[in-house]
Image 1 (cartoon, rainbow, N blue to C red):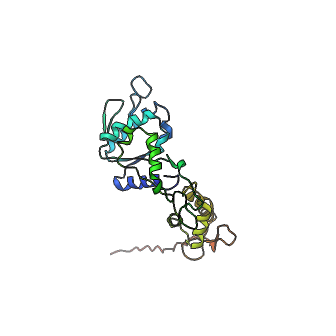
Image 2: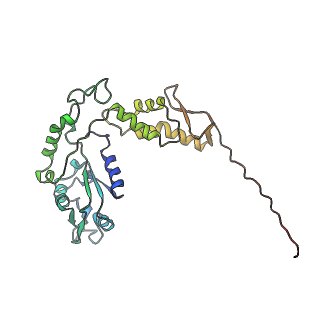
Image 3: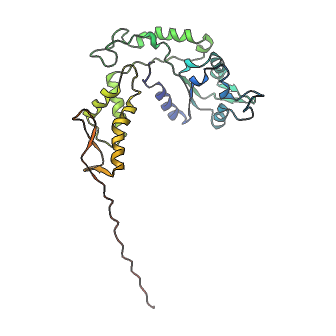
Length: 273
């Protein structure tokens, strides 16, 4: 699917709910043929041969993992060959000759492969109507899957259970994502504030990836400044924002005064029985 639609985020959530064991592998770091050794350890005679491999450490902990191979299309072809055994029966052999068992693990590969073949219409995502051109990414599935099959070998594709296509985000999707992100903050979430974030953060090209960054720069920073300056809401526990000048500003603040501790009287008694 396109960038910023939640592919990696979904894998992370699945890892948390499946076993609590999640590990992300950035495939851009495996663009050279020999670099898959980072996962199973250096071969005999090379520096680090005696050290435990990365996958060896994971296998010792559990055989139930969710592994995310992010941007798999950026890895070297030899990296795909290494994955064949892992995808076939859930095992691989490390540099020490140990068989690592991941038979109950889930392997997820994210990719933007084929997205350049999909036409971004003017109405895509934020248009006045439904998506034009190719209607939706689902209707472009044959085109995208065809590009994936051109990129990867049939042996690799044949070991993958399914290829899931992510649609571009709609306006309703973005509003919901913004709501979820704002509800994590100690602020009054208004419709006006949600609209402000949606208009400032979202683009068809980058999806929802910029939302957290926009909230951090334009909302969270103001909250942090208020806390550092000893300012709290005049009423209630949540900060309020004013957007009358097309910029988010905190309003209705007061200086925080630390409550005084009540003094306790100490009484001593003495006497004889």
